[in-house]
Length: 186
Image (tube, rainbow, N blue to C red):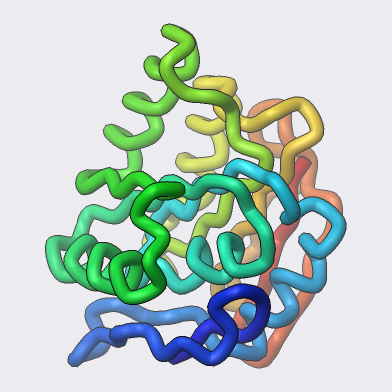
């Protein structure tokens, strides 16, 4: 696993030793960031269900200003921290350990209190077939953590159909890459 382009192009990232964490394939990652090309520079990113942190690190490499990484796995949090250190990006990042519900509630509270700014881009890549995406997107809507012109990109199995509308967000488009589908909400 590596950073594809930008400031940290070619840097190898630490990968999981087993299949408990499923990193995004390079093909899906390339597609995701080609969708976000015009929006990435200077953005605030939330990489939820971050796993290894590769999506958030790729966003930083391509010009994102700041990224929050959230993951519930102790192994994932360790991988994220080691990869952030390897890329020397600790200053423009924050790692939150814990369940996605707790993380989203915590961020919503911090935003409401003026301690955190809303996110321009939210990347969601939960474990497949667990039904977490609709709940996460609904919580993002209710917590009002996405900036007005922001975008949510959800990665899931191609067989999984997500609703056209979740909370205040509408599915703008879907793209399929092998067994993966990217659903874009605004």
